[in-house]
Length: 527
Image 1 (cartoon, helix red, strand yellow):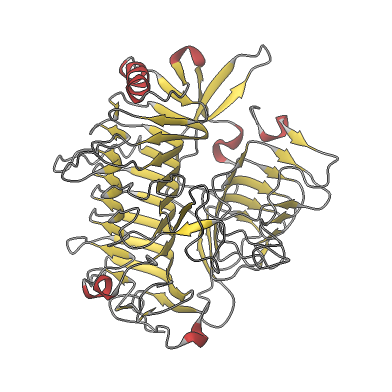
Image 2 (cartoon, one colour):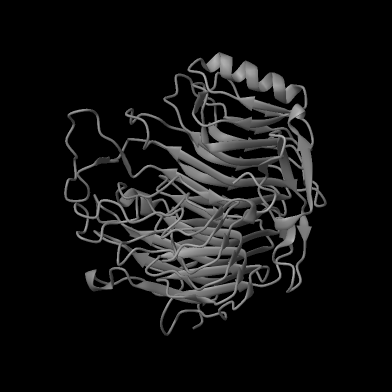
């Protein structure tokens, strides 16, 4: 929607309104289908009042934002599997029904009639109304993690249209702290309005040099970038050098990494208030290789930059993929995102090493019993070692998904980090050497003194080899490391995760444990 408030664009007198049903209903788990591969779509800045409720049976990278649902919100479709998801900055007049969603994050949502169901983990940050109570899930149902008073909140920039047809870029103000009655925050005001005379509208070209030169010229002039949908191969990194600049993608505009291993976007150190949102970052087949290739780099390794706590940076709806959309399985990068600067706020990031990729015309699926539509990634394809490395201080992540990288999924070396909601799948195609090298789903560095996390789930599905991982989470034994509602799940196939954190907590024993969460209410695992 292009209104100043969600109700400016309303769907009324309709059965469904904007919606997503389960897909492949008669070929995948007939007749119910699946939502596990329903990615890369969203609804923002609208109101909807469908007769049968708003259905959104999607998984990762399919957020609902800045919406007013004037009915029930149905985040499932029958018993179709789904692995979501994020609902942020919203009002739901009816009931939120998670159905069989494996995990879900609600951030700054007013729940007028509460929320029900869900499988393994639900996280509520800054929510009001009928918010469920904290629950460790040890007895039954999903774990419920609640942070009613988050210290920080930054909403995603958005575009509006004035009555005269002119566009505006709205940049919501940073919100520090929250009281029970301000869930709407900057939803209906409190944003900076920028005229489009200071905005460069990007139009994709197949020429990587043309894309880079055109977009970089606008950034150097201090303009904001709004990228129209499409693919933008880049000859070099887009360099962000001016405070408070915005790069906003529409339709998940895709930046394709330079072939020499440089990142798609590099934010220079000591540049406060940068907002990057709604962007897909895609790995390329590298023709050259620098010591550490990445898709996004914020700050410079070894350069001290604590950031600006009064004007933090923002990453919102940032989705990385190494493989999946490309026919070439030799795409690669070393790490998807590196954060060397501090005081950055992450809001819904999915960092995905593709577990399945497009079939060439005429190519048959290599695991047709899993899916006849895709090739399943095998060892040596779509290589990426780590999803994210965090070196900066006071970095916040609210809604972080990392999947299938070939070493540690997440490495957090910065102090005073905060994570609310983490979903991780270990790689499907590795062998026992992965476990022998002690790789984990979530690693906090040995020098970190303070780190807080809640709602942390790490799953295994070792398809090709019998892999036995010692533990899912590793962190220094320090009183300043506080984690709540941690769990692992043995999804399918072989192998297992033997413990939850630092060798403590239960693990799967046999095939009968498939789909069952193993839990610790906190990182002492003293339950």
